[in-house]
Image 1 (cartoon, rainbow, N blue to C red):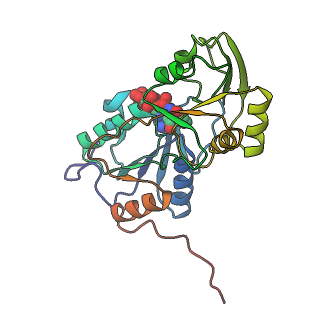
Image 2 (cartoon, rainbow, N blue to C red):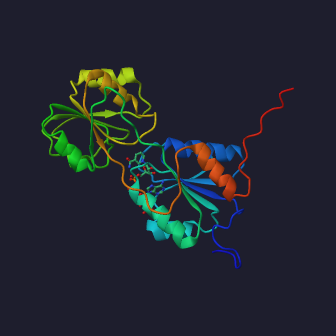
Image 3 (cartoon, protein in one colour):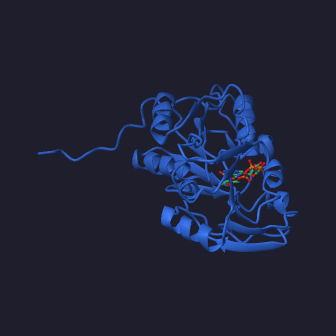
Length: 266
Ligand code: NAP
């Protein structure tokens, strides 16, 4: 319950809730912990053996926007640092923050941009991506475990890469590669060459952790089908870097997030 006379999300209370599941969320949590900020990171619990952020962590859904709103009691600021394609959680964050008056920030890494030599085809959905590669021989699917059903009707050989084993339905001819990034360009080239990949499918996740496949595709002359990001909710400020998120929090927490103390140079 909120104390009488104190609104939820009152600046200066201190606790920051970070909705995570991304490298940026982990880096933000590490930075806040180092600065002495009271931070709670939240993970969905999708991955069996997640890389845990520094500091306090909770795992599992909140029970919709209303459940998240209840969890914001006593939270001074909410940072939605979920993956660019975690659209439901991002919508819930905006809704719960608005309902409780909690300051909210979206931390989202920039999407990828094509470079000379890239052959990229943009689509809006996984279903459109599946249609775009229907005539290919060997498809490298890097869109994650969830949403693989969209590709279940493909007759092509599909190299399916995910962190945890994917469940059915899978494409009829699937080779599952279990791996967690970051990946090197050399490894991506070797994988794509070994399987004779003639098209790569990816979401526009952005960031360096999984970008090597795009470089490998360019070097091998393999076209890439990219799924566009879902739109962001209106009215929520967006930053692209952990540093910008820390600066925003500094303004919300009354200057408690300062750069970590450095030793005296003498
Ligand atoms: P989603 O579809 O947007 O969210 C579905 C439900 O999962 C939410 O309504 C919420 O359940 C729960 N949830 C999602 N993120 C949560 C979090 N950080 N903490 C607590 N509950 C969370 O999300 P998703 O695309 O399945 O992604 C799930 C997680 O994996 C996110 O943390 C995301 O950052 C990470 N991730 C996603 C992708 C991707 O491609 N989508 C890639 C890499 C990592 P309730 O309604 O019960 O609260």
